[in-house]
Figure 1: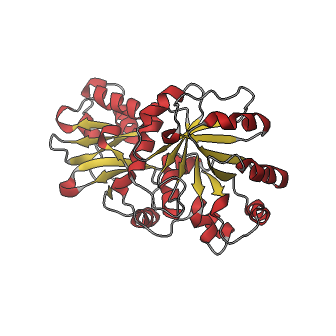
Figure 2 (figure 1 turned 90 degrees about the vertical axis):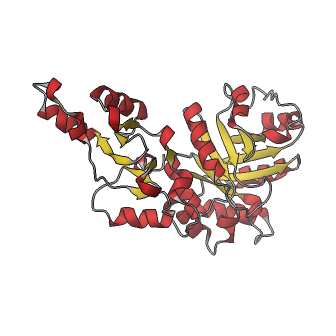
Figure 3 (figure 1 turned 180 degrees about the horizontal axis):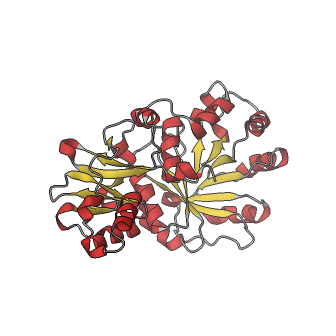
Length: 337
């Protein structure tokens, strides 16, 4: 996941050039610039572009975006985002001369449906997980579900996140496949920017969120009912789920086990000469590794590290052995791309 450093969150440096130099030495991926309807922001952008090769990530909050169009034609800005809620006219006629990537920013209370009218021309969405323009806020966990919903609807669009991104939230966002996150207070309030950056990319420090806050709910997970299990339904659920396994629940949503790719292949090979005699119930792994929905991120990571087996996915279990969702680690396995 890319880290975009919010340059105006640096309260320790009196000179923006000093902040730029610090960011050059820290190897952040982008420099995030918040603009609250002020054309003077391009004075700072010019300084950034003259003293750094780090891409600029400009977030414009304005009622009248057309005021900014001439500057967008002049400056070669890599990422430009417009705050949806502040736009007086929701239609944006971005100059063709602008060659960077375009994004739409929305707050936690705004539906992802508003992206529909921009989907043809815009490259990404920016989820404002705290109040726009306020530094140091707490991440609103409702955005985890919105991110998943957006990724499902627009699989070819990127997701950026701004607000409340500390080391723990960064881990969750990376696991969800978020492309970039903006960090301000956390990054600049740390004793050392490089240490904070490493934490954002690699580590987990404290836990405020539980697995059930960011897991895929059961309606987003591959699942078959124990009572009407068949080979066709297993194959269909596995194909649609694209996660390499299916969860088996009974009619009361109690967890009965999983059928993974390996379980499927093993049983097919054992019955390759007589597929009709194959018993699908023999495929069920009734005691797989599972995780509780009430586990914190810290508990989850400790749990995984104790396991000798490689964990790619985990069924999530709630009260009374109910299956409530899944998590997978595909995006972490892919690495930072």
